[in-house]
Image (cartoon, rainbow, N blue to C red; front, side, top):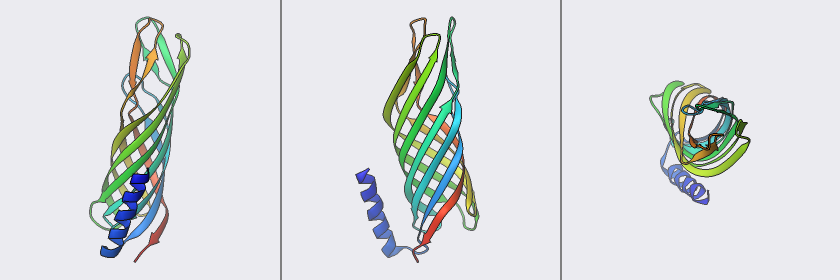
Length: 192
């Protein structure tokens, strides 16, 4: 985290001397999170994104996100395992590129950083819980409408968590997940 803060400070200092239309903005997001694959679970996500805009098209900042997912079943021939809850917290370095100018424009984002995951479940095989800290990244595609934005991102998170079933098998479940967000500008500070 110290390296990310140092990088952000250096880039902020360089751009302050060379750029125009610079500003700092923080966006807040709320959305829907879900997984696919062996286990399908659904839940909510919330995040905050403080970032520095070098100009109206390029930004660099951070994304802090939390997601809680519920439900899901792992079907097998002789037993079912119900997954009750899964949570994820992410601290990510984020870059964005906005296409065009004006109030309504599409944007692309790319994030990388650390994820903390916690999973708990129960069913015919008993209860289980696991947690991990993994590296990951997330591409994002969205569109802004003035002070509001809609986007979708896929968090590719390393590692898996294991679920044991009554037949003695152990299944690997991915930590990766999708998020669809609705965001709004919390505040903006113009530097020019």
